[in-house]
Image 1 (cartoon, rainbow over the protein chains, first blue to last red):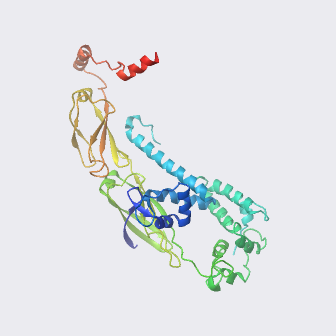
Image 2: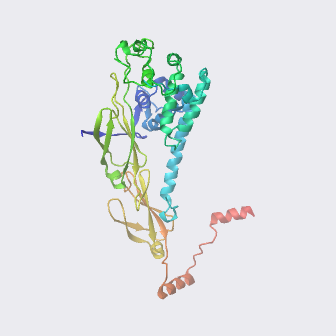
Image 3: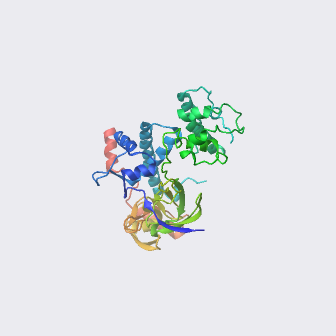
Length: 112
Length: 309
């Protein structure tokens, strides 16, 4: 079986991604991203270069929102609301993880 | 080619308007979406509904579909001869309809003379999503994982280098390693989700790590150097005198991102499950001489109480 070697690009807030790359990743047009920015659901980074740039952490929730857009034939305004809620869920999940890390093992509920 | 009754699949009459079709599709999509439904046939039902909707929501595809009449669902049928040039780019891409199904044929609409475009458009290859579980040790020092892929291009193994300092739920993009693009389109990507395997001692919070440090009452009261575990092996931790339960003691730079994140020992004071006679005497002596009142109101709490009264 052929083997290939590859490096990975981390999709977190430490990395940036251009508008055209973000559009390609998420299968949407640059116009759609403009509209999401109009709704304040998607926020670009300040003054990084000539082309608008974004934190790479947008990729995963935006891809998910765009997939749901296709699956349910949603309009872009609904995608904007979805995106806000997906970000909120991610934030809350991270907070839960932080709190769980502080809970001593002997106080944790049995995991099945 | 087998006929599929898209109206029956969506549960709408053949004269349904777009609004009825959309509503019926959304209802089915919500019931059978793979993220929602646990039914074994959910994915197939979802795809079937999506296929029906893709045709019926598009006026020209729906008109072409309606030209087929109303054979029994599953019945063999032959597409009208003019579809050959209507749906094939330049009338030549499909030498025959034999190896196609109805969904492929209708999806190809728009590429033939009936459609909006006369040439095949570049299409990006399919993106794939995958997940790997790695140990905390591998996450800290970086590692290489093997992904076995099987798609239309055949089978291959991808060796993915995960950089040091990976954390739970980190997402990685492997650009151009997904499905092959068509008509000059870019190859798809792979999105890799990282999970950290549960560890017997350490609990990760992003790049920080936590573990429970159990101290005897005298260790907590008197302090001292105590051997504690880290991902790199045991080290000595200085416990300050008077360390209470719940206190977090930091081991700088020993988190998942070496040098940039920390390891925390969360103190818990435990008592011996049973006392020897001498230990009991010592505790009794301590109880007699100590002026510590653990349940005395905190000065701040006291002022609250005073205001409440």
